[in-house]
Structures are given as structure tokens and as C-alpha cells.
Amino acid sequence: MNPEILFEFFPFIIMFIIFPLIAFMIYKKGVGAKKKMERTAMLLGLESSASELQTMLDENPMAASIPAGIMKLLKNLYDPVYTGQIRGYDVKISFEIRGSSKSKTKYTVLSLLFPQEIHFDINIEREGAMSKLANLAGFNDINLNDKEFDSLLRIKGSSEAAVRDLLMEKYRRDALTGLFTRHKYMKMNRRGFQY
Image (cartoon, rainbow, N blue to C red; front, side, top):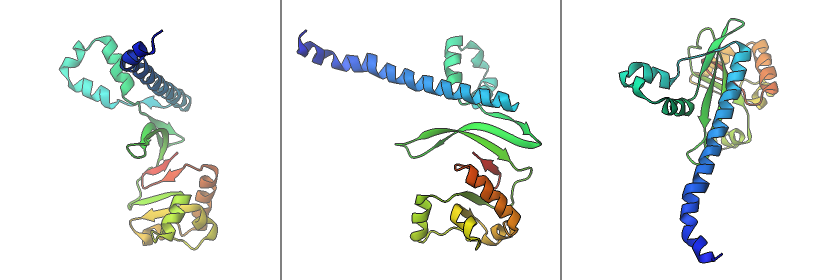
């Protein structure tokens, strides 16, 4: 076979074989993540919430004329949200995209919502290498003078006094220390916990 012929067809090979193959692999990975989320939600007894797509379709009278194949493709492009209650607490499972434009990653997030939102902004997460560097650069978090707690967690809030008041009791700090020790990627904000 003449190598020059391969060189001439190289753009077509990339366009019609390589790109569709990569697109198909990305699509299958997304479908797998959605099926895993659906199984988890089913085990927890959560129900599917109306998705963004379903809301748009319900509001558009032209939606009935969309062919079934295109409708299936559209539904696969949108991410599901599952909600319900576990032991009296509102729970939500959804996808969240984190990262910059060059390195976006899609995570499945389990949220345990507080019965009532905290009345001020608060963010608690594990202390990591980047937050330690930020502390050295002068971007300090709220320190509660509890060596174990302060070394494990990074705390930010709109009101330092309110954060101190909320976490004044040692049993609360101990409970958070235990929770964040067992779950490295746990976060807490004014609405609840995310994992």
C-alpha cells in the first residue's frame, strides 16, 4: 500500500473514525455514571425529580413533535436529580461539575440538607495542601483554638463570631472531626453536607 494514499485520507480517518469513536466512549461513560446514580437512588428510596429538560418540554407545545430517537438522545444529555427523605432529612443526589475549563470533572454528589438553613454563610472542608499554602500566603481560615479540629478542617464564613458561636460546643467539633476524618471529600455549607 502506498503511504501517500494514507496521508491523503488521514483527515477523513480522523473525522469519520477517531472523533466518532471518542464521542461514543464519552457518551457511554456518562450513561454508566447515570445508571450507577439511578441504582444508588433506588437503594436509598429516592425519586427522580423533574429534570431541567422535562420542565422545558412540558412548557413547549412543539415537544410532542420531536421524534423518539432524538428525544432519547436529549434525555441522555441532561443529568438526573434524585430527591427524597432518609430518617427525616431531605436528601438529594445530583451531578456537579468542578474544575476549570481545561480540567472539568463531573462528580456524583450526595447532599444531606439541614431542616433549616444556617442564617450565615459557612463553608467547612478538609484542610489540604492548597489551603495550607493559602494560609501561608495570608488567606487564613477561622481558627477555633482546638488543635485537632483546626489542623483537620478549613473553615470560612461570613461572620467569624457566628461561626465561633455555632462551633463553641466541643461535642459539635468532635462530631465534625469524626465525620470529616472518615469522609475525606465531605463538605458543609449553610444548606447541609455534601459528599
